[in-house]
Amino acid sequence: MKRILIGVAALCALIAPSARAQANWTQPFAPFHVIDNVYYVGSAGLSAWLIKTPKGLILLDVGLPQNAPMVEKSIEALGFHVKDIKILLNSHAHFDHSGGLAKLKADSGAALYASAGDKDALEKGDYPGWEEKTEFNFPPVKVDRVLKDGDKVSLGGVDLTAVATPGHSAGCTSYLLPVTDAGVKHTAFFFCSASVAANRLAPNPQYPDIVADYRRTFARLKTIDADVFLAPHAEMFGLLAKRAALKPGQPNPFVKPGEVHTVAGAFEKAFDASLAKQEADAQ
Image 1 (cartoon, rainbow, N blue to C red):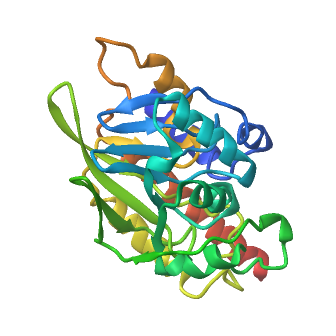
Image 2: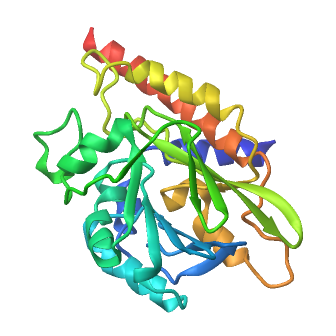
Protein backbone atom coordinates (compact mmCIF):
# COMPACT_ATOMS: atom_id res chain seq x y z
CA MET A 1 0.00 0.00 0.00
CA LYS A 2 2.80 2.41 0.88
CA ARG A 3 4.40 1.78 -2.51
CA ILE A 4 1.11 2.50 -4.29
CA LEU A 5 0.60 5.75 -2.39
CA ILE A 6 4.12 6.89 -3.21
CA GLY A 7 3.50 6.07 -6.87
CA VAL A 8 0.30 8.12 -6.98
CA ALA A 9 2.01 11.04 -5.24
CA ALA A 10 4.80 10.93 -7.78
CA LEU A 11 2.29 10.93 -10.61
CA CYS A 12 0.53 13.96 -9.16
CA ALA A 13 3.84 15.79 -9.01
CA LEU A 14 4.35 15.06 -12.68
CA ILE A 15 1.03 16.45 -13.89
CA ALA A 16 2.69 19.74 -14.85
CA PRO A 17 6.18 18.93 -16.23
CA SER A 18 8.95 20.48 -14.15
CA ALA A 19 11.90 22.36 -15.56
CA ARG A 20 13.96 19.22 -15.03
CA ALA A 21 11.46 17.13 -17.02
CA GLN A 22 11.36 19.71 -19.80
CA ALA A 23 15.15 19.49 -20.08
CA ASN A 24 14.62 15.93 -21.33
CA TRP A 25 12.25 17.00 -24.08
CA THR A 26 15.01 17.33 -26.68
CA GLN A 27 17.43 14.79 -25.21
CA PRO A 28 18.15 11.92 -27.65
CA PHE A 29 16.97 8.48 -26.63
CA ALA A 30 17.83 5.21 -28.34
CA PRO A 31 14.80 3.89 -30.25
CA PHE A 32 13.55 0.44 -29.29
CA HIS A 33 10.90 -2.23 -29.80
CA VAL A 34 8.19 -1.88 -27.14
CA ILE A 35 5.74 -4.68 -27.84
CA ASP A 36 4.41 -6.51 -30.90
CA ASN A 37 4.38 -3.95 -33.75
CA VAL A 38 4.95 -0.88 -31.54
CA TYR A 39 8.26 1.00 -31.37
CA TYR A 40 9.45 4.02 -29.40
CA VAL A 41 11.14 6.73 -31.50
CA GLY A 42 10.77 9.75 -29.22
CA SER A 43 13.18 11.71 -27.04
CA ALA A 44 14.01 11.02 -23.39
CA GLY A 45 11.03 13.15 -22.36
CA LEU A 46 8.55 13.35 -25.23
CA SER A 47 7.03 10.27 -26.79
CA ALA A 48 6.74 9.40 -30.46
CA TRP A 49 5.21 6.02 -31.30
CA LEU A 50 5.83 4.05 -34.49
CA ILE A 51 3.38 1.31 -35.42
CA LYS A 52 4.39 -1.17 -38.11
CA THR A 53 1.85 -2.64 -40.52
CA PRO A 54 2.20 -4.77 -43.69
CA LYS A 55 1.25 -1.71 -45.76
CA GLY A 56 3.49 0.91 -44.13
CA LEU A 57 3.97 2.81 -40.90
CA ILE A 58 1.78 4.88 -38.58
CA LEU A 59 3.48 7.58 -36.48
CA LEU A 60 1.75 9.01 -33.41
CA ASP A 61 3.19 12.36 -32.26
CA VAL A 62 6.63 13.81 -32.99
CA GLY A 63 7.41 16.24 -30.18
CA LEU A 64 8.81 19.74 -30.50
CA PRO A 65 9.71 21.15 -33.92
CA GLN A 66 13.40 20.55 -33.20
CA ASN A 67 12.66 16.89 -32.36
CA ALA A 68 11.62 16.05 -35.92
CA PRO A 69 15.14 15.24 -37.25
CA MET A 70 15.78 13.12 -34.15
CA VAL A 71 12.57 11.15 -34.69
CA GLU A 72 13.42 10.61 -38.36
CA LYS A 73 16.90 9.39 -37.41
CA SER A 74 15.42 6.98 -34.86
CA ILE A 75 12.99 5.57 -37.44
CA GLU A 76 15.85 4.93 -39.85
CA ALA A 77 18.01 3.43 -37.06
CA LEU A 78 15.35 0.76 -36.52
CA GLY A 79 15.59 -0.23 -40.18
CA PHE A 80 12.46 1.58 -41.33
CA HIS A 81 12.18 4.47 -43.77
CA VAL A 82 10.50 7.83 -43.25
CA LYS A 83 8.92 7.53 -46.70
CA ASP A 84 7.10 4.42 -45.48
CA ILE A 85 5.04 6.48 -43.01
CA LYS A 86 1.53 6.52 -44.47
CA ILE A 87 -0.46 7.98 -41.57
CA LEU A 88 0.45 10.64 -39.01
CA LEU A 89 -1.59 10.86 -35.80
CA ASN A 90 -1.55 13.45 -33.04
CA SER A 91 -2.61 12.98 -29.44
CA HIS A 92 -3.24 16.70 -28.96
CA ALA A 93 -2.40 19.99 -30.64
CA HIS A 94 0.17 21.39 -28.21
CA PHE A 95 3.59 22.47 -29.43
CA ASP A 96 5.44 19.81 -27.43
CA HIS A 97 3.65 16.99 -29.27
CA SER A 98 2.54 18.46 -32.60
CA GLY A 99 5.46 20.80 -33.28
CA GLY A 100 7.32 18.34 -35.51
CA LEU A 101 4.34 17.12 -37.51
CA ALA A 102 4.78 19.57 -40.38
CA LYS A 103 8.31 18.37 -41.13
CA LEU A 104 7.41 14.69 -40.85
CA LYS A 105 4.45 15.24 -43.15
CA ALA A 106 6.58 17.06 -45.71
CA ASP A 107 9.37 14.47 -45.59
CA SER A 108 7.14 11.39 -45.64
CA GLY A 109 4.16 12.48 -47.72
CA ALA A 110 1.90 10.90 -45.09
CA ALA A 111 -1.68 11.96 -44.42
CA LEU A 112 -2.43 13.58 -41.06
CA TYR A 113 -5.46 12.34 -39.13
CA ALA A 114 -6.64 14.42 -36.17
CA SER A 115 -9.74 15.29 -34.19
CA ALA A 116 -12.22 18.00 -35.08
CA GLY A 117 -11.54 19.68 -31.74
CA ASP A 118 -7.84 20.15 -32.52
CA LYS A 119 -8.01 20.67 -36.30
CA ASP A 120 -8.09 24.46 -36.10
CA ALA A 121 -5.16 24.63 -33.66
CA LEU A 122 -3.06 22.30 -35.82
CA GLU A 123 -3.74 24.27 -38.97
CA LYS A 124 -3.04 27.61 -37.28
CA GLY A 125 -0.13 26.39 -35.17
CA ASP A 126 -1.23 28.03 -31.92
CA TYR A 127 -2.61 27.22 -28.46
CA PRO A 128 -6.33 28.10 -28.32
CA GLY A 129 -6.98 30.52 -25.50
CA TRP A 130 -3.30 31.51 -25.38
CA GLU A 131 -2.91 32.80 -28.93
CA GLU A 132 -0.94 35.77 -27.63
CA LYS A 133 1.75 33.48 -26.19
CA THR A 134 3.94 33.03 -29.25
CA GLU A 135 6.24 30.67 -27.35
CA PHE A 136 3.39 28.13 -27.59
CA ASN A 137 3.28 28.39 -31.39
CA PHE A 138 4.45 25.64 -33.74
CA PRO A 139 4.62 25.11 -37.54
CA PRO A 140 1.03 24.75 -38.81
CA VAL A 141 0.10 21.53 -40.56
CA LYS A 142 -2.89 20.57 -42.70
CA VAL A 143 -5.28 17.92 -41.41
CA ASP A 144 -6.31 15.44 -44.11
CA ARG A 145 -8.89 13.41 -42.21
CA VAL A 146 -10.95 14.46 -39.21
CA LEU A 147 -11.49 11.75 -36.60
CA LYS A 148 -14.34 11.38 -34.16
CA ASP A 149 -14.77 9.15 -31.14
CA GLY A 150 -14.81 5.48 -32.11
CA ASP A 151 -13.34 5.96 -35.58
CA LYS A 152 -10.93 3.32 -36.84
CA VAL A 153 -7.49 4.23 -38.15
CA SER A 154 -6.70 1.30 -40.42
CA LEU A 155 -3.63 0.34 -42.40
CA GLY A 156 -2.52 -3.09 -43.61
CA GLY A 157 -4.96 -4.93 -41.36
CA VAL A 158 -3.90 -3.01 -38.25
CA ASP A 159 -6.71 -1.04 -36.58
CA LEU A 160 -6.40 1.67 -33.95
CA THR A 161 -9.57 2.98 -32.33
CA ALA A 162 -9.83 6.69 -31.57
CA VAL A 163 -11.01 7.45 -28.03
CA ALA A 164 -12.10 11.04 -27.39
CA THR A 165 -10.53 12.24 -24.11
CA PRO A 166 -10.95 16.05 -24.28
CA GLY A 167 -9.96 18.55 -21.61
CA HIS A 168 -6.20 18.86 -21.88
CA SER A 169 -7.07 20.11 -25.35
CA ALA A 170 -10.48 20.40 -26.96
CA GLY A 171 -9.70 17.50 -29.29
CA CYS A 172 -7.42 15.41 -27.08
CA THR A 173 -7.58 11.89 -28.53
CA SER A 174 -6.26 8.61 -27.18
CA TYR A 175 -5.99 5.38 -29.13
CA LEU A 176 -6.55 1.68 -28.45
CA LEU A 177 -4.55 -1.01 -30.27
CA PRO A 178 -4.71 -4.81 -29.89
CA VAL A 179 -1.21 -6.26 -29.41
CA THR A 180 0.26 -9.68 -28.69
CA ASP A 181 3.23 -10.53 -26.50
CA ALA A 182 4.63 -14.05 -26.07
CA GLY A 183 1.44 -15.43 -27.58
CA VAL A 184 -0.81 -13.55 -25.16
CA LYS A 185 -3.25 -10.90 -26.36
CA HIS A 186 -3.17 -7.46 -24.75
CA THR A 187 -4.59 -4.01 -25.40
CA ALA A 188 -2.34 -0.98 -25.69
CA PHE A 189 -3.72 2.42 -24.74
CA PHE A 190 -1.94 5.44 -26.19
CA PHE A 191 -3.08 8.11 -23.73
CA CYS A 192 -3.45 11.73 -24.80
CA SER A 193 -3.22 13.44 -21.38
CA ALA A 194 -5.50 14.81 -18.69
CA SER A 195 -3.26 17.33 -16.97
CA VAL A 196 -4.37 20.90 -16.40
CA ALA A 197 -0.93 22.25 -17.36
CA ALA A 198 -1.37 25.80 -18.71
CA ASN A 199 -5.14 25.53 -19.02
CA ARG A 200 -7.48 28.00 -17.34
CA LEU A 201 -10.46 26.29 -15.75
CA ALA A 202 -12.09 29.28 -14.05
CA PRO A 203 -13.31 31.97 -14.17
CA ASN A 204 -12.31 32.51 -17.82
CA PRO A 205 -11.97 28.96 -19.17
CA GLN A 206 -9.45 28.07 -21.84
CA TYR A 207 -12.35 27.03 -24.05
CA PRO A 208 -16.10 26.58 -23.40
CA ASP A 209 -17.07 23.40 -21.55
CA ILE A 210 -13.48 22.53 -20.64
CA VAL A 211 -14.43 21.50 -17.10
CA ALA A 212 -17.24 19.27 -18.35
CA ASP A 213 -14.85 17.75 -20.89
CA TYR A 214 -12.36 16.84 -18.18
CA ARG A 215 -15.16 15.27 -16.14
CA ARG A 216 -16.33 13.23 -19.13
CA THR A 217 -12.77 12.09 -19.79
CA PHE A 218 -12.21 10.90 -16.22
CA ALA A 219 -15.46 8.94 -16.42
CA ARG A 220 -14.41 7.47 -19.77
CA LEU A 221 -10.98 6.44 -18.49
CA LYS A 222 -12.62 4.34 -15.79
CA THR A 223 -14.12 2.20 -18.58
CA ILE A 224 -10.89 1.62 -20.51
CA ASP A 225 -9.84 -2.02 -20.46
CA ALA A 226 -6.17 -1.94 -21.42
CA ASP A 227 -3.05 -3.41 -19.84
CA VAL A 228 -0.33 -1.62 -21.82
CA PHE A 229 -0.29 2.06 -20.88
CA LEU A 230 1.66 4.41 -23.19
CA ALA A 231 1.65 8.19 -22.77
CA PRO A 232 3.00 11.40 -24.37
CA HIS A 233 5.43 12.31 -21.56
CA ALA A 234 8.04 9.80 -20.39
CA GLU A 235 7.32 10.50 -16.72
CA MET A 236 3.65 9.59 -17.09
CA PHE A 237 4.33 5.92 -17.81
CA GLY A 238 7.80 5.31 -16.38
CA LEU A 239 9.63 5.09 -19.69
CA LEU A 240 13.15 4.96 -18.27
CA ALA A 241 12.48 2.25 -15.68
CA LYS A 242 10.45 0.11 -18.07
CA ARG A 243 13.04 0.40 -20.82
CA ALA A 244 15.77 -0.66 -18.39
CA ALA A 245 13.68 -3.67 -17.35
CA LEU A 246 12.93 -4.76 -20.93
CA LYS A 247 15.09 -7.86 -21.34
CA PRO A 248 14.89 -10.95 -23.58
CA GLY A 249 13.16 -13.88 -21.92
CA GLN A 250 11.70 -11.70 -19.15
CA PRO A 251 8.08 -10.50 -18.78
CA ASN A 252 7.47 -7.32 -20.73
CA PRO A 253 7.44 -4.44 -18.19
CA PHE A 254 5.13 -2.43 -20.43
CA VAL A 255 2.37 -4.94 -19.67
CA LYS A 256 0.95 -3.58 -16.44
CA PRO A 257 -2.75 -4.22 -15.73
CA GLY A 258 -4.48 -1.43 -13.85
CA GLU A 259 -1.96 1.27 -14.68
CA VAL A 260 -4.45 3.20 -16.81
CA HIS A 261 -6.83 3.55 -13.89
CA THR A 262 -4.10 4.38 -11.35
CA VAL A 263 -2.76 7.19 -13.53
CA ALA A 264 -6.26 8.45 -14.38
CA GLY A 265 -7.10 8.63 -10.69
CA ALA A 266 -4.01 10.74 -10.03
CA PHE A 267 -4.92 13.09 -12.85
CA GLU A 268 -8.48 13.47 -11.59
CA LYS A 269 -7.27 14.28 -8.08
CA ALA A 270 -4.86 16.87 -9.43
CA PHE A 271 -7.61 18.35 -11.62
CA ASP A 272 -9.96 18.74 -8.65
CA ALA A 273 -7.22 20.56 -6.73
CA SER A 274 -6.42 22.85 -9.66
CA LEU A 275 -10.08 23.70 -10.22
CA ALA A 276 -10.62 24.50 -6.54
CA LYS A 277 -7.53 26.70 -6.46
CA GLN A 278 -8.42 28.61 -9.63
CA GLU A 279 -11.96 29.20 -8.36
CA ALA A 280 -10.65 30.37 -4.98
CA ASP A 281 -8.07 32.67 -6.59
CA ALA A 282 -10.82 34.24 -8.70
CA GLN A 283 -12.86 35.29 -5.66
